[in-house]
Image (cartoon, rainbow over all chains, first blue to last red; front, side, top):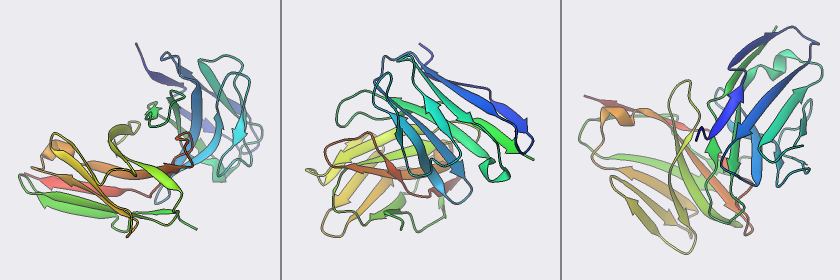
Length: 113
Length: 113
């Protein structure tokens, strides 16, 4: 039982390049989330999904796209990376019940030059 | 507008003493509150939670207090241990759904031996 895993752990991009961050969970959770953490800013929700095939915008969705084709996977895409997207990205998942906690992955550190 | 505020960026305490981390919120719709702990280069891990129908929840050395009238919650760690040194995030959700957490900016706790 690996919980929530993220791929890759670290990546350097040039401005304008694209990439996809992969999140996988093996807890059969309905809900999945993508957050970014910046110094002094806490965690901010980018996009989330309440079930397979569904996605919704969070607090800071601009410049990102997501897909939830399989229940266990949640992909975060950057079509044209910008230096402002330099951050640490965390994926999380939770069961679809009130009061259930969110379980986080180890994070992906992204540097956009 | 920041709905969850952790006004102390850092806190330093001696081993064995009490650590008190504070959190204020502005959204009266919040009905579930959580504390997460984060070590460097790791994802946040769930620590303890409390629903709005309670004013206290205890789990071992960790106790969370909720004062709804003041829109304030606090996390008490007694006794503090060096391994408790981490960033602590306060988070809140509301409207009967826990799938959108709003996080504070975090407080760095350092427990000195």
